[in-house]
Amino acid sequence: MTAASLDPPPTDLVSIDVSGSPPTVRVTVAGEVDSTSAPVLRQHIEPLLDGDVRELTIDLGQVTFLDSAGLCVLAAAHRQAVRQDVTMRVLASSRAVIRPLQITGLWDLLKAERVDGSATLPTRQGVA
Image (cartoon, rainbow, N blue to C red; front, side, top):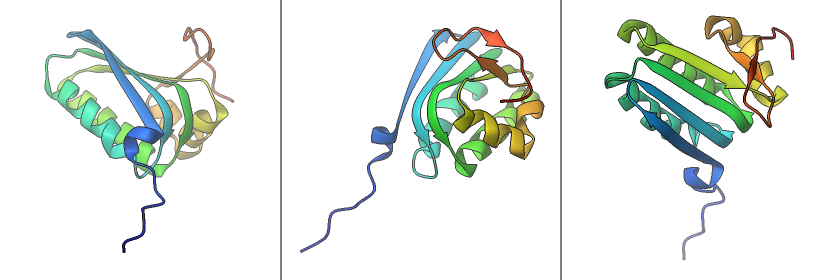
């Protein structure tokens, strides 16, 4: 007899919606981005950056948890976007996302934008 895994599948933790078409694409992320679900996010972002996308918006407005694995995905996406000459925007609304970005310095590096969680209209702020 084998024990069932206590960890939920990655698709139960995060949902990712890709909208738009090249050259402008938006990736909307909802849920938890951690070591289990970050690879799912990476699998959505990398092909976009390898393709014909020139402007990529990553909307983290519905993310409730972001850990170091998610931060690594964002940093890697930024490096790839710079190499590919892609304009990348990161939108965030909750303290659970903004603080890790600020603490690691990614908030400034990514030029992340704080948005109202209900509207996704950017309001550039440096402090959560």
